[in-house]
Length: 408
Ligand code: PMP
Image 1 (cartoon, rainbow, N blue to C red):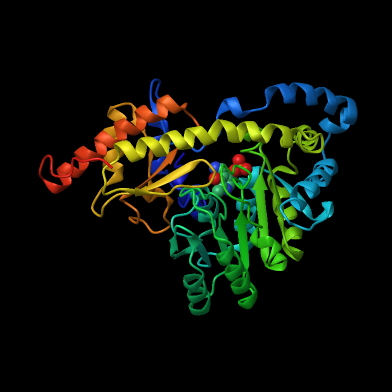
Image 2 (image 1 turned 60 degrees about the horizontal axis):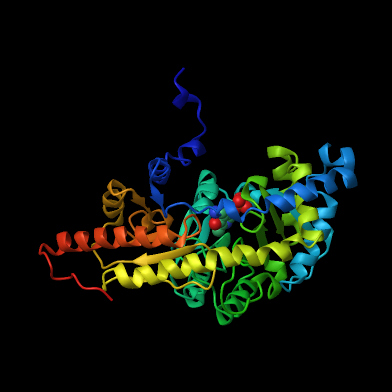
């Protein structure tokens, strides 16, 4: 049957992504991958899961295995109130919605908000999964200029005043892919702008708890609660396989999010929600989180040290206070897709940064490096390999050997 004839128009926008091809290559045996964006398996609290699984069965019995409300399992929503209050978010359990991963919220938001041609403002670069979630609903993306402190408020205000923007999407803490964090001053400025223009902001915060240095900053939601959908997840601080996301949305948006989710999966796994409720309410997250931070911080430090030793001096990179990624920028003209292909022949891989830009062709000279999936020694070796490949690519670019061959 000619499938093309029956596919919906939006399906074409789901496009076979080049990044999927890259991720296929990196799963080859023996490959050292700095390409993924996934937590270290040794960060999963298996002993705690063993313990609280029994508690869940005892405490909730068959309820944990029954259909539930689309909004979410009440004990989890109650546990999340305390979790969010600690971030400065003032809420009640009836306002919190549970989703199948925070990815589920992104899709639902696309479904209830985006008409074909609507403008969605994003950081440049931004989270690829958000681009993928919104794309089938046929938005026009408006890239907002960003620097190492995140989205530029003036650029956002200019975009909002010149063009109608349906909503803004940003990742405030240890952003995927750059690792950067929006400064307090900019949080205040952006909160003021969305109130002034009466525009919705989608604040996606999966990494906020993975802080290795410095002091946490309040979500923009706390500064403009009527204009922000705040979403987060237990994927990075418990286990992504549980698919446990949640959000807090103003007014009517919440109502439509529930209806959109109902049509997709009725509700998120009741048993997993019960496990998550115990993980939070039983104080396990508080006890376990420091061990995740203790696992990742030295990995990040090892990667940064190795980059200072092995990367050519014409490259710059982010030094994030937390999260899972470092963002690298090479000199203009550098083609990181070609560099990645060279690195893969030496069994080392990363993600070329161009995939994280809404505008095709932007960011060709950038790359994203992940440091959560390998130990310090492996990371150091991988960075040396990538450094060698970068030196070679630079020499090729300049057409002369040796001229750029010095280290920081
Ligand atoms: N938002 C961002 C910025 C992410 O990096 C991720 C995971 N890579 C997600 C959302 C989705 O997370 P999950 O669906 O596992 O909650």
